[in-house]
Amino acid sequence: MDKKPYLDLNTYFRSLFGCRVHKVTVDAGLDCPNRDGTISVGGCIYCNANGSGTGAHRQGLSITQQIERSKARIARRFKTKKLMAYFQSFSNTYATVEQLKSLYDEALAIDNVVGLAVGTRPDCVDPPVLDLLESYTGKHLIWIEYGLQSAHDDTLARINRGHDLACFERAVSITRNRRINICAHVILGLPGESRQDMLETADAVAAMGIDGIKLHLLYVVRGTPMETLYRTGRYRCLAQQEYAELICDFIERLPESMIIQRLTGDPHPKELVAPAWSLQKRETTDLIHTRFRDKNTWQGKAFKPHNPD
Image (tube, rainbow, N blue to C red; front, top):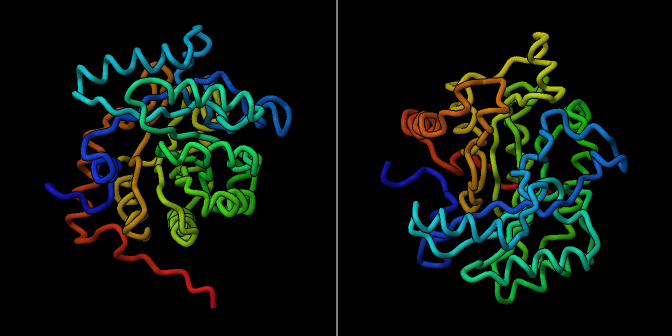
């Protein structure tokens, strides 16, 4: 397809900067209240020991070293100069404002870093943290990425998420109108969820007026409670075609202005238990595009604008 049937991240970046912008993952060495005992010690049932990150901080690499290493590799492979520093591992607003400022300042001081994407939980933000992020928006592009995963509270409890939908809605509410872009993370294939449950999450996210979304496949990682569920036959992974159809049906319910930042995840091959097809990212993307074409649909076709009355 020459033109994608959805608004992708590369198109969005090119509209702002006139060129490709690459997101560089950063591990700031922060923790998570769902792991350190504040909420729970187990974390979400699918999360690995690195908090879905690189583990670079444990290797002794500073933020500057992480970005500079990635910068050289990206420049060779993609010919890209402009970068976004993506604070990915664990909860990247879970520290004092002073600590966070030091971390964010270090990333933004690096040549060609045009902004920040800060991954966190909706229960880890407050006005002082958002004031800090907003203070950068005069010169930099700032995104905050809130993990929602599902709009169903029973699912959130089942996966030991540690917050409910109302918590996510509060975080969005206090972030909106601050010049900070908001991205939601959603996982498809969570235990106990039906196809209808997942499409209801699409409708809920569509009604919130947020700026972007990342869609993830639930894949099973070694050493997690999800592995136990899978190996004991209490969890079935989505099939590749099933996932492609879900993604298409999910996206067509979203407003055309919402930026689709991700269509699936990137499991570490050595950690992956199942499904094996989750490593076939190009093939999965092609199936998604084929589904859009065969169904003659596009982002926003089934979107229903929220009517407060």
